[in-house]
Image (cartoon, rainbow, N blue to C red):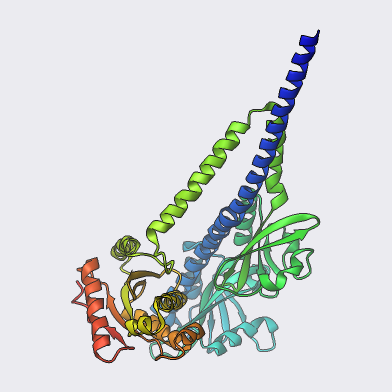
Length: 490
């Protein structure tokens, strides 16, 4: 009997230890998975959804912009206007062909002389200064820009909300003939948002600069709801509506629900794309798995494997990052520059879009090291890196070439690279950190050499030309930008 009691006690102790240990393991795994899920949503899932939708919207917008430009330069349209706009059926057929060929919502032409508004169905109206709906024409003409994108009601389609692309039309002597263009159905973008909402289970919508919702899967919110007044998000609306060329992430609480939100500004529409997801709903499934694993006891191994895989991936990413970056500046190293240079060459061969190389050297860097010490020299190098990164565009890159030299790959011709180089020099003269470091010595300046890629170039040849230009800048007094003459392009 005593033995049975001892066994029972042992079973109870072992069972309790296993149960407690299992519960602790599961709890630890649960919180680890919760944080991983949150990081994945913030850093990967939401941004990926946002950028996919942004690309889709831009794809839908850029084709109509291209078509409007073709219409504005079409000699047929110009000749028809110059000859007196006599045959209505001719312009009607032309606009109808444009509409159906490119699957557009509408196509139109407005005459500067007669103020007639022609569309694919014929003559819609004659613009009047007394009609508030016609003010768009004079407003566009007064802006002196080649084209614009605006959202307005389409009188030819029961006042449906339409994204219009308006483009100026000039005659052969550059006199204004009128405005032509096409329209994109806003419903098309709304349907796109609805499809993504179903696919990713996230709320996706567009708002204007005042916070008014312009496109949403819930049509009742369109032109009726404003995020400045909506619960939770109204507290961060000012930051969300801040125009920035970079994507931004936010968090807020709505009715005891924690919401993760990411945004991107669409300059063509002057609207913001907002993508948000409930963190609580996303994590609910993890809690369900925790309960199931506790009951069945089968999830421990899976969680361990998951943690191991996450750790390996994390350190692999760190090692990969260390392999391609310079330790001091955090910019790319020479090996990574060579890899991206090869990609730029392939892009050039495919699209014939030029790119250039900029070599930058800090003038009299040895004097800085001798006067201030190597720590100050390192600070100068890091400050110059920061200035260069802030001066280039998102698709350009900077790498540390060695010592106090940097190399940049700029997507554009040598004139574009020269503009960026001059911007760098201007920022150098205004940077407070550099002025503080070199307070008692001469101002820090840069000598810069530029070379544009040609089809006969290798990495060595283009950098050698840029280096020669850099040497010329040094020889001619430093603090200069020299563009080397590229060999004949074939």
